[in-house]
Image (cartoon, rainbow, N blue to C red; front, top):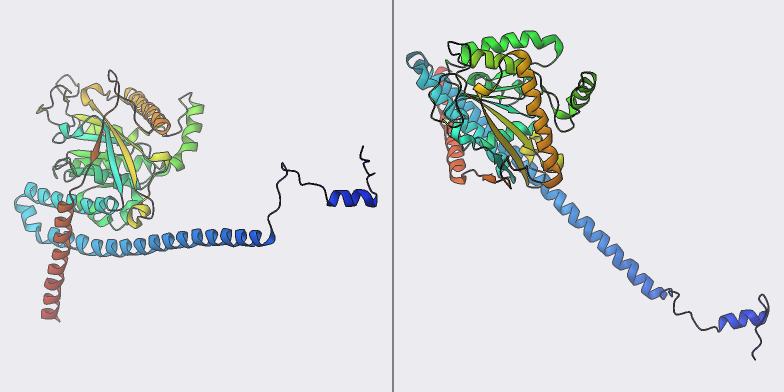
Length: 415
């Protein structure tokens, strides 16, 4: 029998030195192996850092190139638009309808250029729900949820293939857009810039009513785009939720409770009345209706993947990865919409409660729910024609060159 040395004695230390290694215990690598491994980890880390640096550098270069092109695009396109409008003023006196038709076509081309900036950055649109092309020749109001400045760019894109809708459209936008590069174009076209806030509300609604009376029919407008929430989701959500809690209304997260004022003014001004006072709107089964006045309400819901909206800076610079924005449409005949204030308020609240449900379903599943009576929802990919974009951009730059030479010629003649 082998004697076991007592711990702490010289014999125990010698025995521990010569003890066989435990196979279950990991052994420390030799110094040379550790050095090689540390060097490899450092090289991998440097490679990742260099790869990220190259990617960030390319994003920066691309953003600068896109910004430079956008500036040049705006200079030639907007300047040419203004020059054409000025030179066509005699036609406005002789044939106002034809003048506003030509102006509307140029306006559509300008919005198509803005849409192309996002298109070539990989920001595309998938459409769901009702096909709004079926009502593109009738008068309609689009009620849209508002998350960011990119909502406007998204609509500019997805409405380009809907005939002359964009050419005959009137936008109701926050007054801040008046001071953007596109502000002068919108002023000429007849869009309305609304100032937010309680102190301005009553005055702005009176101005809106007057604006519609003076510009909507006379300029042959057919569609109006309205953001009833009255501001961006991130700015209004807390206030809206407090209002909902105080008034025992549904608690909404993905949208806010809409404001009724502008919608009420639009419907009062544009809905044609029958002799009995009821609206003379269209019927979903009779799209060929020739009824005058506003005929449709298009409930439009914009959804971004992971609830991360695109802003106008991203649309211009293109530094975000390609993204598909999803837009859901639901068409309501105007005859089904109550026109008295209380009934319209309840109806509008119900539409935004439905938007909340649509967006909740989208953020959970990545798709909008199917319509009632259907097993699955069908989406439609919206596309822009590269040839069409090339043609309108070429026209813009050639027009800019032409007007530059004309102005330069007259300048030298005069001075």
